[in-house]
Length: 315
Image 1 (cartoon, rainbow, N blue to C red):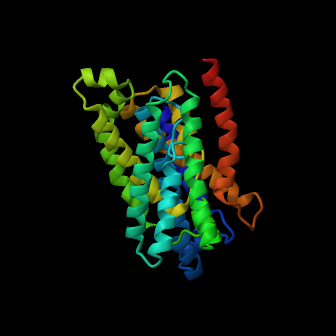
Image 2: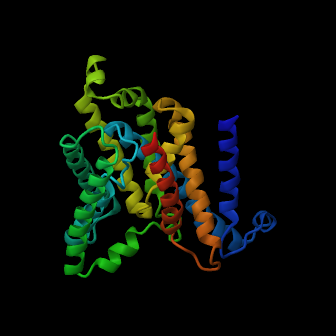
Image 3: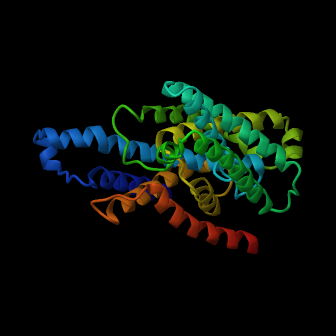
């Protein structure tokens, strides 16, 4: 019943997202053949809603995998330096290959995200495993250092405004023809689901995983590669969205447990629902103007994050 309720809520919010915006759309005019209404609907509203669903589910699933790879509930691509490393990669492309196609930008961002996350995992081996708060704090510090390097060079080459506007989490510029790379996340979901059992075992620690015949190191590298690729795709298409990879997996695991194969679809749906809600709020709070969805996610996410933080520390 809970899963059915999530599907119904996702369906309802998807319908609302298709018809909320500056331009009023009506079902009767759409089916009556109004060219302007159909243009807005198929060129902007459908791509935007699809992007919201895919980005929300992708970031939530990436957070879930990262938390199992590090055995820490507060780690996600935004608190492990993954997003900041991908941002540095995008800056490198803007500096040296300004006219590079989207595929090259995605590949370079993936490489930087992958190696940045591997550096973070290397740092985790130097930290006490029992301190749950130390790991995300180190990840945030590491991400800030990488982000500072990117900002420094962006100032040097006068690319700050370009990079900031491009990488801010915002779906208002999503249109038909410039979001299709997000469909790459669908086969990534399939791969993650196929290896869900292995990722669950990795979440129990290196000793247990090795005793069960699992190559712990290679599985970590494989998981980081999937997370880095998915995070880079989302960053290039829609920008950075904070907190989503932390709060959604935690809320789902509190209700459904930690079996990845069981909670993976629920985590993906919940992430899409949360991002759709935030985007709808962003569109109506100061209508006809629009707030970047990353701002709304940051406000709501920070509140939920503090609640989860106090709950975990008390436990």
